[in-house]
Image (cartoon, rainbow, N blue to C red; front, side, top):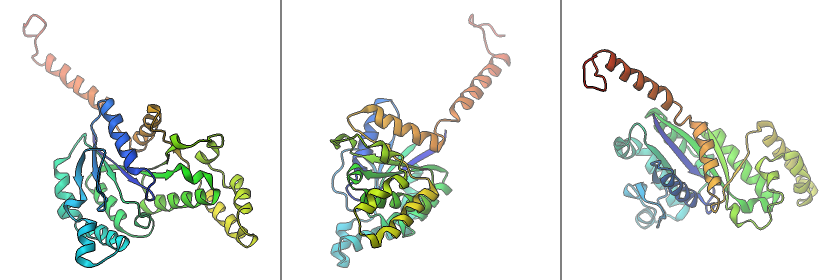
Length: 282
């Protein structure tokens, strides 16, 4: 059927690990096997079972102690170390996975890793060359919709990741279950910068209006950023997101032709010397 993967990215604290855990539980419920991979060298605890762990290669705590780096500098060092050891470490670890396997990579929350640095571009190129079909899942906290300026900044971050990684991309607005007022949620799921611009101008000084218009025009020109809501109290929510990801990666599309080929091959065996229900040769 193929090898499939999700790359779960987004700002720190946006609910990436919660998404991975909820996805894992949902897939267990529908009898679908997924393996969650931790790519955060600073992670300490997990709600889901970890199949692969970057901390087996390098951990932030060790880097900070040995090199005297701070949290951000140490994390960048860890990810660059991963980039240098993709073939040696990741390549060896992935040898145990093949056709019909599905990996979910839970990534760190430093957005510069996806927008500016080469680490994840090298990472996805390595996976693609190894035959994996990948979809990026960009998580954004629903708290961002409470402030238009925050939301536009988050949308621009998502757009930058889409352009940088050049992969099928699904944007998810997380923590919808924590929102008290959802009346205007649809305005942010399918954002129209022209409608949001007056609110943004009202919250900033006149000297920023030209910049606001430029940011809105950029989002409008690409017209790529929309969001799917994730409410962890609603099972249909994660099912809808997984359905969109499956369409983006063409997951399972070759199952029907393959089953048909197997059935035809089975029919051929019967014709060439199989037996009837009575055990007599045909």
